Image (cartoon, rainbow, N blue to C red; front, side, top):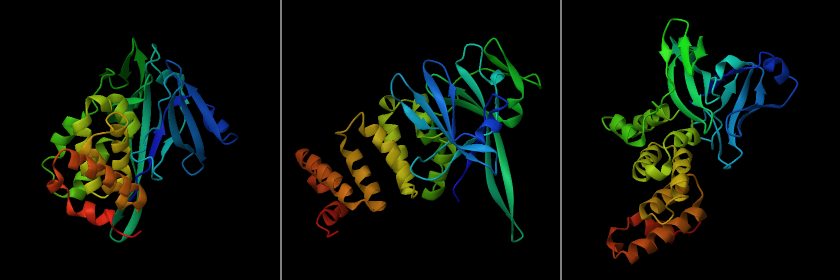
Length: 286
């Protein structure tokens, strides 16, 4: 079952009223970045897409969308200026994840609520807590909750190496992929704003492989494409991209990557290590 993420940000109390009259809204953030809110959902009284855009460097991505190639969504419900820190660097985000609970043959709608802190300069979701943490106020760029807890905006989202350590004990490939998607709930764009691909090429490639092995090929391709933009000649990456493209039916594109992979292996005098499927798929009729 695909997951849907709902997000409650709070900037202008009238936004839910305005949303019914407009197709989109814009929220200005720090360093010439913004959130674009699109597709109002009347059932949840919320936005169905939240898009982070950095106008200076062109870095843009959907927030709370684990796989931009599929129809999972993020929602923004309503807002208040108190949720932006005094230095404009952080934003409190209320995330609501609806789901279904099966009990005695009946389906019941459920909601899982969380409280996140977004770094406004690049769209990195730094951390997540229980929804009760969203009730509070900013004091000297620290978030003070109504129950007396102080929340310091610091990076807690696990690094790629930490993700691999966490999922290592999981034997079932499908469960392993699900575990990774749970950790990267904020979406690939936001995750890589927290942990840049350039500094984590090998571990991200491994994560992409585990994701693909669990059947989430489009999600894996998002990771592979980020690595490819930095290290396009990486031989094993070519094979991984080819396999995922083949699995989603993009056979002609896959063949190009299989050919490039095979050529690279031959140049390395490693032709004997080329998997049999590569040659078989290269000569197959499409």
